[in-house]
Amino acid sequence: MKRRDLLKGLIVGLGVPWSLQVLAEARPVRVGVDVCPFCNMTVIDARYAAQMVTRTGKVYSYDAIECLVDHLNGYGGPKVEPRELYAPDFAASTAKEAALEPVDALVFLYHRRIRTPMGGGLVAFAREEDADRFVQERRLKGVRRMKWAELVAEGKQHAWVPPY
Image 1: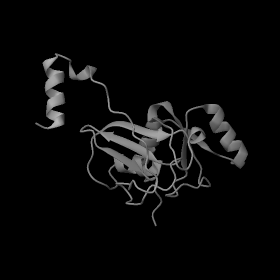
Image 2 (image 1 turned 180 degrees about the horizontal axis):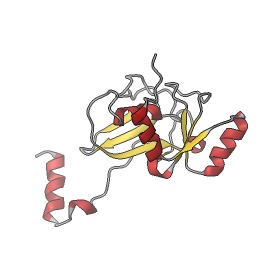
Image 3 (image 1 turned 90 degrees about the vertical axis):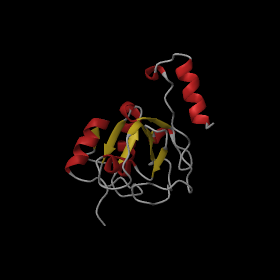
Image 4 (image 1 turned 120 degrees about the horizontal axis):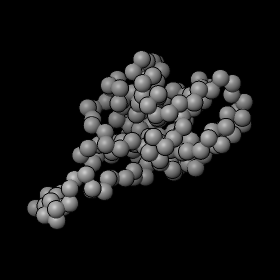
């Protein structure tokens, strides 16, 4: 018997409704190992990475936040049904380790001068103060702040990953 079938049987047998099940959680991004399903590049910097857990429990790690948004908007990559989406809090992450947070809890910054692995100019922060400090330290003018829903909606109008 497969492990998954055993677990499903136990959950159903105990009478636990599916809506009360514990959701999967983000797994550590493996820098230099994980390959982005959208752009096929290896994740090179965890501060810009993103992650999706599908309805079937498969975990995809993305090279950049813009890859995740463009994948969700149908610009490429395998067909997926997302259950959970994560992006790193730039302030709490390092190049080797991502502090992943649910995308709805983050503030996203866009500026063309923010250098990201795919050139989309997107970073995420869990706290407004950290986002403000990032902008001030880099002396960026005209930075756009967005929530996840705005980012995805704008991505339907144009791809975030620049055409090369």
